[in-house]
Image (cartoon, rainbow, N blue to C red; front, side):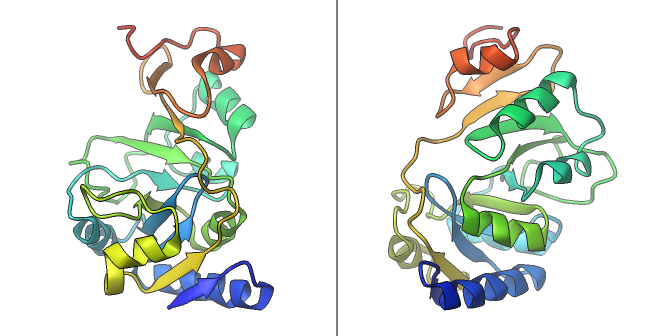
Length: 214
């Protein structure tokens, strides 16, 4: 089912339908800052596996959260640098890689690496869904090797009936990809340049290393 979230009544029905779908382990497509994403309950192993199957790939899936406080429940501890970066750039285009709490029973397709890439998106529709569902495994809503979807119709053409609910909302789409920062070591390091520059990151965490720095 496709819902046009630019229409208030349809938006409310669509968000409710998406939340119900995620809670029962189905897949949904929703807008994020840059592209449409395909998402599933991060704690339902079969749902994450369905997501990876729908995309036609087997690799680690990032997690999106609906509030900064949710992060505290996912990690064993957060460094001062991590807290400063989250405070400065969430919600927004910053993905942080952290060590997740050992007690978490999930399989994000990473082979049990012990780390997770987490972001709080800026898009209001995504935030509404995430605040109801809790953490979701979310990847770009395209099949492996296919173009990134810039409209919900492009996502539906690729993913079809593998997804239960499609939420359409163009607001904020087409922004640059998120910057990825690794916070698992002694010194924070940018892994992938994106919407937030290295210079901007260093205004918050001066010791931030560039991707090419060992």
